[in-house]
Image (cartoon, rainbow, N blue to C red; front, side, top):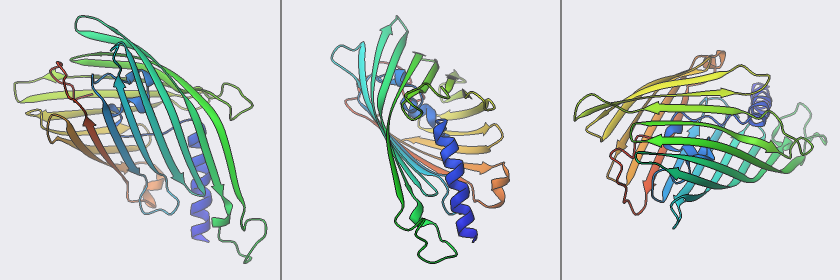
Length: 296
């Protein structure tokens, strides 16, 4: 019975969360393309980033997701393109998204402003046969698999300089899921600074605010201390959800790895062991002239 309740609870949570595009990552600033298509190509090189998140560990049916972002400027460096793959599992549901991204960047002397579009498909499978029922081989659930396929599209604006980034986006501005209509239209604001203390220490505060109609505004604030541009250590707070700590390491000029742990503040803390997240990022053909390309 407990297993049944866990699966049902996370299925309901997941349906509500995913309908409102609440993919959340503690290390979102390393893969900004996940929340803003205008981020594509902002690193000036072919960028591969993957993030694996295991949320609310210890609870059966809890969300588990992986994201892969690949993006790069094209020969005309004002034009940028990318691909996104998202896979999310929660309760009885497995959901995948495939998205193509296009961004046009206006370059200034020490900064840039870009406009991005993304579009693709979202496939969802609900496997009701996984439910353990009191009646063995219940025909209402056995072999009952529901599949849906819908289109989705989003838009974003992104500003970046050596010491600042800021963006606004609606990753799911349009979806065919509800009778070919605009729905929810989440709006995400993100920003961050890079502050130099001395030649060996830098601080990067960052924040994210997410607004979804008929839902409370959600905020995420964090700060990281970087030592000799090699190791970053930081902490953050996500409103009414969790506090988290993270670290990332620059293994060389191209390869970075990161880890974060979330401590749940909601009542789910009584049932879970927190959330874990792993990030890997690789920059191909690294030819950047920017002093600090790795901080966001």
